[in-house]
Image (cartoon, rainbow, N blue to C red; front, side, top):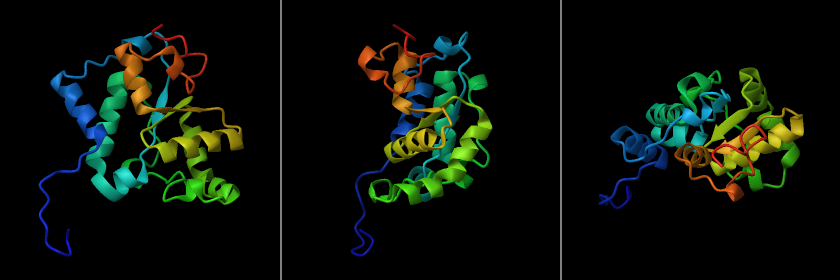
Length: 178
């Protein structure tokens, strides 16, 4: 489009920005009530492609807005550094499928240490590559944290998460909302 000076008639938007907008507008009536008594802690992964290479800190802020809306503000623990300065998980850019798992895990060790430092038992990963890589890092390094998709928590907060959609949840959450 740049080479031929074509002006698109569409706008590219992240689903995370839409979730945040819909929550703010009341169209997506999420609630953190399910976690009021449980007080389960979460940290947030900022995917490289989404944050650093595409939409920047505004989408990272929307990601946190959604996470806090569904989990409770007091239950979201920040990694440091975060947003545009967050560490890469080591699984993006095709590396997850490259066939070099030991190298991928080596590059991801810093992300693993960053997550462990939060003490959160769950990582919210809105990117599939991040989800798979970080799950593998937890298993490989014996860290014990779980990785959940953002949509899983949205569905949980809406009370519509099915019994068959809970494979990433631990014992502390697998019965929530049933």
